[in-house]
Image (cartoon, rainbow, N blue to C red; front, side):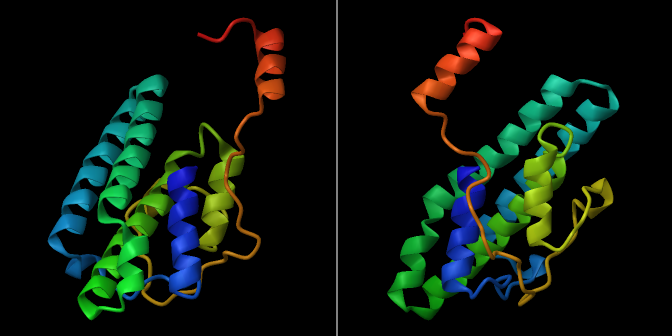
Length: 173
């Protein structure tokens, strides 16, 4: 949830809620490596689902999000956009385009596990349903994203909510 929110917030504030002007075929080297890593994990997800290895499929989703989070944290696009330097802005566009692609894939991959969160992500891209055939869909540079009313996908549980869950479902390990 945090990776998704950070990506969308940065795009909203720095690119007027539009897909950064980058093409998948022209990504910088670091971004292309991340895309390859995500693609491998998406393939694992599909294989796990086809074998009805649901827990392993979910672990693949978590790894995709972790890849995106690590990439964004290392690249620090929030710093790049502030420099005003053309090279830094190009790098920020690459990072945010790649992150947005990962967000889109997460929207599809999450559907079997958290359909409401998946639907909320896909609405941003004007998509109504999670289709595996759209996993490799390239986002059109400059396309408007529906970021109105954007809020975090999940809220942090309060101590009271945690206690209520513990009472209802037993001890959480």
